[in-house]
Length: 138
Image 1 (cartoon, rainbow, N blue to C red):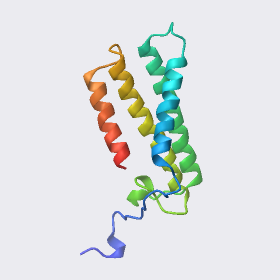
Image 2: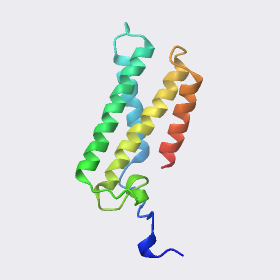
Image 3: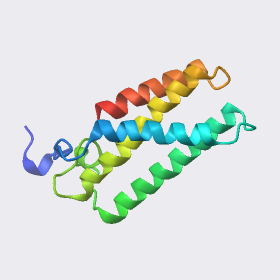
């Protein structure tokens, strides 16, 4: 039997605030990433363009997580301080924006892989489909 002293993980999360337009943020992310891809010079191959957009996504994501950790205290045993909606009224809800951006990026990248054979590989498609499913389910 577990007592409060013995709890290894705590569920402290809530769903993201209804004020956060999750679907709209994902769509904006898809459009933003597509805009970058299609407005890069045509002399650059689609594969290199994909790498450029991927690098931008990685930089934005790392920056978002760093800002989150600088402004928040996180106890790693509190599962939904990291996943889910976080604790209402704290900076935890702000990570929702980063998750929406990443979900939009993964959807964009799947579309780009389907449009350009030079970018497509079965392992990359599986990777992005799994990440999209995991990101959006969170």
